Length: 273
Length: 292
Image (cartoon, rainbow over all chains, first blue to last red; front, side, top):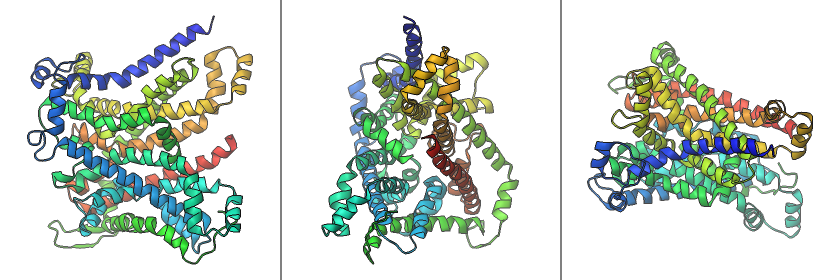
């Protein structure tokens, strides 16, 4: 009997929490389905209007008027290329580097270890100016390589894969060595399949991390051709309900990942921290 | 390291090379450049530069605007840590207690974590604009809220914008921490102590200490670095430059003001702060072993 009363309070507090999380996004979404004229005279809206298809298709496909040249569709394409590139590059290089660190006897092993992990001290925000200069010296401004590689230069994933490899029993390598497996085959045939779950988790986490990049694309793209969705928020203009529609659309990829790949994403958070 | 290892003279370098190459070119090169900038003074017209020793550091320490940014960053991280930590813990405790709908609550409470800070900032912008900001007008009616002019009101604005998404992060980790506490411990404590609230503070909360400490570090790191996108899309430092974080100020001075020396010195100061935070973090990871 007594259980029911506290449980009601639990639900009540949780519902307040949900309200704080959902209402702001709902208001922007509801407002994005009205005409700009209506918003400008009546303010933000809580109920849906009937301009949903018109507003969203205009934002997505129309060239001039919202931004100068680029369509939002192209910006989504750029964001996906960037996020996929960052996730792929960091997973592949980290997987390999962790393997090199754990499974080989290396000269200067601790020096290389520190060379890799000291980089955790320097987030991109702290080296953004000099990185910009390096990228421009390498002629990589306004390119996907320039968008992707500096963000992938991170040791977080290496740290995590290294921990995972260390937890794999020694017997696995002993047995493989008895069979005469070489280091490359052991990596491809044993370790990569064993790490599948971790690879998926890190990949999804890095994908969201890459998609959410704001500062880097903002300063290294000078032509609209390489603009991404999140940085585009800063530069967009156009009428108010179209801007609302763009903000809502920019949230969809991370939302889809949370709803459908939640298990992997959360695993990724725990492994990356 | 493994006891059984491959003995090879070159394979290991093949595996290490891709990452090391990327780190050397895109991380070490810029970092070395940052140090060079920090100890150099550029001629105002860009004609030359000379070695300046610690002059850039002396300059930022005598610059009142650096203190303003420093003060704001400290206040900002403290308030965000406190607010998001307590709301996250409150929600996690409730979600851990309910029997029905646990997963629905979980999904609906964690999604803001995946939203980019810049997107959150743009959204907050609409709620705090003078034109049709619902919160702007609500607060304005209550106490004459006006973040365009009042520093404290601007603080409120960036704190709300900065906390919203971080509540989710705190919720996820606290919920995981609560679920890791063994059932037997809780059952035993129920026999000893009838009061839910007292039991929470004397049994559950101490057991959550590792999570709490870890989240403090996560929240501070978030307030220092990730809020860049929020500041840049909300106040841009307004009213004057009272809501500029250290990272934001370094970016403005370096990229907009083209004062590379000062920006370099500021970046090195930030690296020292990150170093201190990281040392704490490693201490925590070592400390965690005792709890398990």
